[in-house]
Image (tube, rainbow, N blue to C red; front, side, top):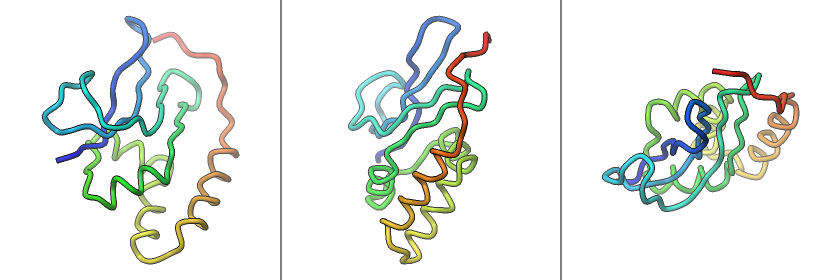
Length: 114
């Protein structure tokens, strides 16, 4: 089974994460199938960049997001957009809306100490 999950990168005490599609049995920082995005919790607001088209592809093919990734998807509205795609709305419209949402987020590139 494929899971969409976080893969830790960054220095000691300065975590940032890649969002990856990986086999359920692979270790956290081990082998993965595809890099889908990036998440940095240390910026204000948090940095979250994903390729939603590829996320939709993996979800359509049965990949399950982990609990932490599901919370991130909910916080940026990706779960609601996915529900609309499953209901039959054109993917192109949803992707345009997602691009507008990510462009409207003002992220300070300066990271906060942990």
